[in-house]
Length: 171
Image: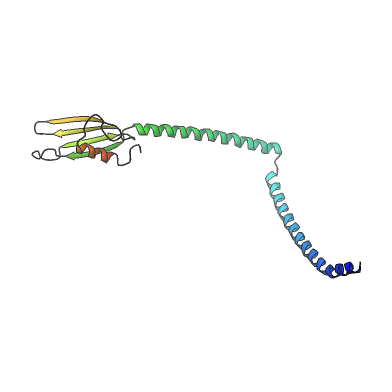
């Protein structure tokens, strides 16, 4: 037993130092937690000052109803936006015009080709050929940037290209 007492007495000083350091660390952490608790307590007193639980509950319910109403309005605006987008793709809003002289003996660029296209590059191309004998006008349907039923002249192709610089299907 004598050897055990010697080991305990020799390590007693070291044990006291270690436990003192641990105690100081725990005391510092306790002080830090106490300061945070006081800060939270002060903020909660400010938040709840003059209010009862029922008041806060009614306020939260009121805000919840307002948020639901705003959400419904946003959804309605989203639906309207989609409708406008669909309508915009159907309207003829791409225009390309080119003037040209098909005959060298007639002066000036009196002839023209005009392409009127929608968001999918579909619509029509109108061509006017001016000659000394008169003017002829032609109209050809266009689907996705090309005519399936009629051969297009180079001028009509140019008018379509001017009207639809974007890829087919883009607005």
